[in-house]
Structures are given as structure tokens and as C-alpha cells.
Length: 267
Image (cartoon, rainbow, N blue to C red):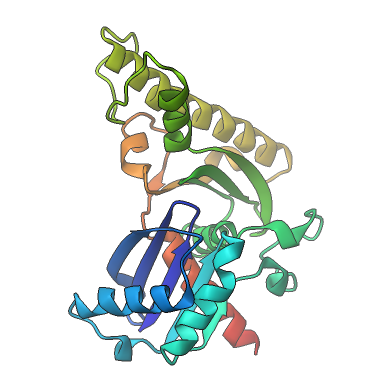
């Protein structure tokens, strides 16, 4: 089996992937802390397996997407201490594969999670495609008609914005993040839910619409492209908008595996 690690700013997602069929058979999610040491990470990973029906011995390879620079070395060391050699996604290693547009600026700044999303969207849904990933940031990743990642957008995530609002507006209390019954809120709670959830849905719809138009102008039939929702808040946001053609919670994890396969085929 293959172990995919998606290390985000707020949470770390683990996916154990069976090679045949290619699907995630076990998932874990833990809080991300940039202060974690390699020893702590190795113990945590071992404990997750010890509390499951699987064993680390089942893992043949490990792939890592990490957007927290302080944890790169710690995770690499932790995996090596468990007897595995980690594959760490770096966009610059894929410049000759056609996955990244040749004219994209600063490819070294592309997050591994964004490249994994683009690669798996291309593999599963075909080009052109737009991926909306609801995490600490809301990332939108775009694959053009030629099957290359060309960019997208990055905005603060829904929970990040909500927490900032609750922290800095003294009269606004923390409320559950869920779809409100009305766009015109009748209570303070509904007002907040409308502004946060429906407001975020409106932002996503506008960005996706503009991106489709730009793809169409480039000759990529963008108006017909797949729009895939993924990330931790995907299920909530999918209730607030009908802009998605598919919901895929395991897209990033499978994308990490796909990039690992591509790199190993090249070698």
C-alpha cells in the first residue's frame, strides 16, 4: 500500500491507498503543529496505525505534500526512522512532464497540494478542470484544455475568516458554520451564517465563472469543464452552491500517489 500525507497549515490528512484498486482505504486527520519534532511525528504515525486494522508493514512507499516549511525536515526524518524513504512533492521536479504550463511564473512556489489536485483532476475528470479546495486557504486550481496547471486563485479560508471575525468583533459570538435557512438572517447567528457560508459560496461562484470564461476565450471550451470540490469544508459549501460537477474528498491524497507514480515511471 501507499501512504499519502497532505500536511496543511491547520490539519494533516493521512490516506492509506490500495494500489489495486486505486482507492483510499483508510483516512486519518490530525492538527498540524510547526513545533512537532521528528520523534513526535514518528510516534503519532505509529499510534494511528496501532489503533487501526492496518500495519506500517503494509506500507511500501510514502508520499508527502507539505506547505509548512518548518515541518519538511521533521516529516522526512520521521518517515526515515520508520524505515521508509519518503517522496516529497516539489513542483520543479515536474516541469518536463507537461503538468505545469511552460509560461507559469515561479513554479517553485506552487504548493504540492495544488499540483496534486491538478494532476488528479486531469487523471480522473479530464481537461479542462477547475478544483476548489476548501482548507485553511480556499485554493482554486485550474487545468487548461492541454492538461497543464496554469494557476488559479488563493483566498483566506472560510474558518480563518470566521475566526478572525469572532476574535475582533466583540459583539459577535462564535456560531456553527452551516448553511442558514435564509439569506436574510433573522437572528445574529443566521446573519453570520449567511454572510460566511453564502458569502463564500458567492465568491467561489464568481471566481469559477470568470475562470470558465477565460478558459473559453483561450479555446478550451471552459464553460463545459469539470468543477471539483474538495477539502475539509467541501460538504458544507456544496450545500450552498450548485457550481460543482463533482465532489471528491480524496482528490489530494490520490493526487499525491499519482505524482509519485509519474516520478517513478520517469526514473
